[in-house]
Length: 346
Length: 257
Ligand SMILES: Nc1ncnc2c1ncn2[C@@H]1O[C@H](COP(=O)(O)OP(=O)(O)OP(=O)(O)O)[C@@H](O)[C@H]1O
Ligand SMILES: [Mg+2]
Image (cartoon, rainbow over all chains, first blue to last red; front, side, top):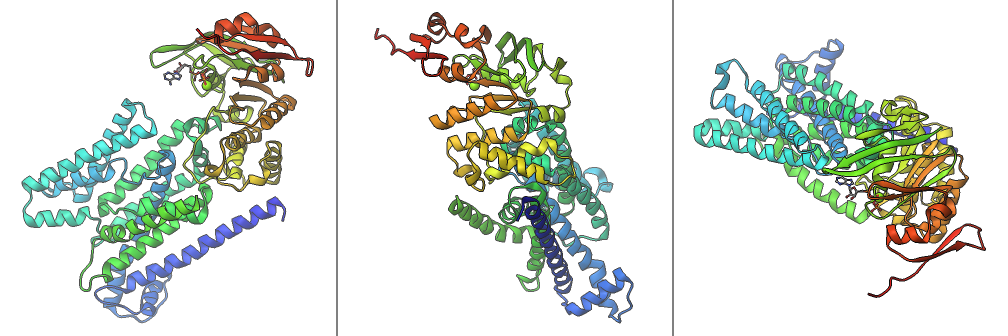
């Protein structure tokens, strides 16, 4: 086969993979809206979604329609958006910071969001004018600003950014613990705990309407910079020598991913491991080139988070686990497995 | 006209690293940078590549201040191979060499056949075609260095900046790579530690010492017995080789004190 044809067929294979992933994602979402305290037959779920989205006129019960439309579909779609956003952020930060351990919360966003949330929920800051999510969003941006200032004051290299993120995360986590320990009653503490662990149960259409556009635009920007990200493989100087305007690329990509994570963390709390593990798994499947890696990461992140949401509702009968617990329970062993395979491959 | 530095100064860590350096590479020629460790060769190459900003003086490309050249246009003209390159990413030799095409490709243009042909060609030039699917971290030091040289050649530059491109290569590849660079119609500035290679392959040499140009000119004028003693602290016999007709240096062991 001549090189052009080979590349053509590889692109075709890439598109096929994305197509398969999209079908798996739709299947996952269908299952996700069917399981729960009241389980609904898959066929009925499909009919409800078809009625609502395509305007068909199947006969379905009003309660089933309500449960799926008001609660479960928005939640399932949000899980997909959440997973896509966290995973692509992990992939981009791992490349920009040249650190395979970088993940969406490495810049202190999650710690800041937690502090913001407890400041609202427990201290009553803002006197009811700001929602818990609003407080989390402000906290996340505040932490990010401190990390950015600290990192640039100390030289701005990748290691300094990571160290600044660690310091600021520790500081804000301490603030959170302080507030919980001194001011919260048992019930509040439990509520905050639940939020901190990453929780999808309160998610509604309004949340999706807020998060989906941000994630969509941010993912689009990341995809547009796929080739620039490739050029970072040998570090910022090498990228610059390949014609990449590194300051601009960094600003755009840090900005996009931070905005995305700030919105997501403010709605669901900290959902760990998706942003760390999924990029590594995707790299295994799609290779290191970002034009293939980023779409693979987005799809895989969405699928796995939808699956994690399903598991969170069926693992313990009559009870819903925080999704962050599920992603950690499955993500940690998955990461260990990837580590060992990577070692055997090298 | 091509790449030139005029009265260039640069400092780092509160220390003057380069001071009043002037040099010009003649089009199509190979200009060698020599000098002891820490004399400023790598720093000078980074300034010439536009990777660092000069503190004083100016670096020009075709007479134009390099600071004013757009990044992308610069990368289509000037390619650089750093003294060392490292990556954590699981990239293959082919991935690395293909990076050289990044400056030439539009945002949405896909990989095309001429790109592929050029990449294949430079892989053959550096003798890595058979290893093109190997992962970077499984390569030997010399293979990595040749992969980076191939990447720079894939940029199809008019100016090539090489920082000790042969320090990890076996003797065959040292000679082959330098002969290849001489053959190519590009202007090259190359930092070298092996003074015999410098004398054999460079049209002109610039000798740096403590961030300043000590002397510049043809190899036989720059490399004299007295200078080798003063700058490098070594004694040597110099002569024209009867075999290749160029300057040849035989170093003598240090005198016991
Ligand atoms: N970023 C920096 N911060 C502080 N000092 C620096 C920096 N970069 C270079 N230097 C100093 O400048 C001097 C010149 O360094 P450079 O790397 O240019 O030397 P070189 O001639 O390439 O040496 P070698 O032969 O060892 O490669 C050295 O003393 C080095 O310590
Ligand atoms: Mg050097």
